[in-house]
Image (cartoon, rainbow, N blue to C red; front, side):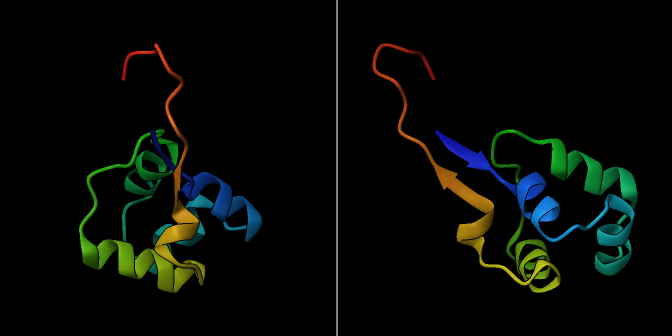
Length: 74
């Protein structure tokens, strides 16, 4: 399972939705949707690059691989 960690990274940097939205020039609702996604959202390279630049992180900080439990459906 791939987990999206934007919420965690934002919290570690004490960055609000509004602040990230302003720095990325996105609507706050768009940031909220990205932040609340549990699975990896469909995100283009340019947006991922900008997220990493604004949050001073790498894609590996935003994405976590957790092995699926055996016997559980995807």
